[in-house]
Length: 113
Length: 112
Image (cartoon, rainbow over all chains, first blue to last red; front, side, top):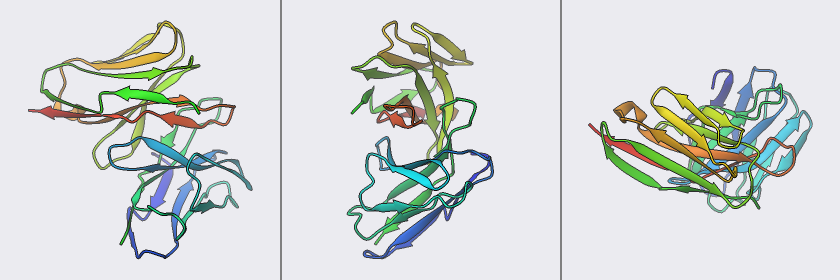
């Protein structure tokens, strides 16, 4: 939302290929999160980063990797080890000042053929 | 780990009818948030409840936090077609990480 961008909106890949999803924010927020959403289900946390050069595994990190080399960028790589990669991927960032709601990017819908 | 159960999973209503979705936790919550996701869109933050028994209103939406801080509800009065979407509750995970744990969501369909 607002200053969070994800690209592309739709992505198609062949099975066995790694793919990197982009998430950029110009809000100067420290923390960034990646969630996965499957049809009819809630959001599940993949990875999160509370500060540059540091990140932590979420609840479903297997088959994914991330980096946080810059404050404004938190790319997510879906590796070939992820068994069911087809999903809607959402990046989010909470505002500072102790507030913990999350602002979401528009999402990337990944389809692996 | 912490879980939050949300019911119902789906609800179809006639325009003008009311709608309610419920979230329940087995543990006491420090706060609970509500989000709305329009079809094809991303979740958008609606509100956060913090106090026991808290009730907050946003136009036709009424949010409640239970006295024991283990449950919450979102009630929409006189639904409109613009209310269509999926409503999620979310609670904070363990530790001060800012992580959120989301309910499964309630998808609302409104028939005009």
